[in-house]
Length: 263
Ligand code: SF4
Image 1 (spheres, helix red, strand yellow):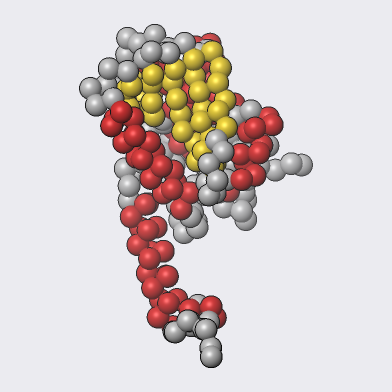
Image 2: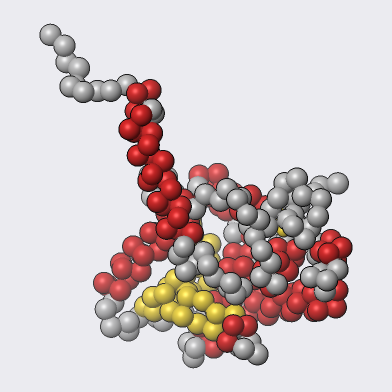
C-alpha cells in the first residue's frame, strides 16, 4: 500500500506553468500596490531619513531628484514592516481605546518649515505617557538583529528615535526615554530592545546637518552644475542597495550614483 498523498505535484512542476504564472501575478500585484502606497510616494524628508549617513542621498531627496528608472527595488521587507506596524497599533489601541496611556501612530511635527511641505513631521509608532517613552518598531532580519544586539542601533535609528522624542515634546508631552524595538522577521519571537534617555541634542545636531546639506545645495547648485554632486559625501554606512538613486554603472552623478566607493 502506498501512503503518498494524492496530487502531490513535484516542486519542479510547481515552478512551471500555472504555478509560475500565478507567482508572477502575485509578485507584480504586491509590487505595484506597495509602490503606489503613500509612504512610497512621500516626497518630503521624514524623521526616518534625516539621519541617513549618505549626504548625497539626502541632497537628491531634498531636490526631489528623479529616481533611477527601472531599478529593481523589492518592497517585500517594507510590506512586512507595514503589516507588523498595523498589528502593533491595533494591539495598543485595543488595550487602551481612550488613549489615556498610549498614543498610537501619533502625528507629530519635529520642526516647522517655512512652508508646510518643508516641515519635518511623521507618525511616532507608540508613546507611553506613563513612562514618557517613545517607541519605534523595526522588523529585522536575522543577521541585522544580531548586529543590533551586539553594536546597538546605529546613528540613523538613534536619530530617528530622538527626532520623534522632539516631536512629542513639541506636542506638549514630556518624553524621557526613547526605545527601538527590533522584532525578528523570522518565526521565533526574540525581540531586542535598545533604550536610552531622550537626547534632544542628538535630534538638533541631525537637523543642523540637514540644514548644512541644504546650504551646500544652495551654494553649489548641483542642478546647474552636475559636478557639484561629488561634493556631497557618501558613507561606508550608506544603504546603497535600497537607494532609489543608485545606478551601479553610473559615471554621471546627475543620472545616478554608483554607490559608496571605498577607493
Ligand atoms: S547609491 Fe549609496 S552612495 Fe549613492 S546616493 Fe545612494 S546611498 Fe548614497
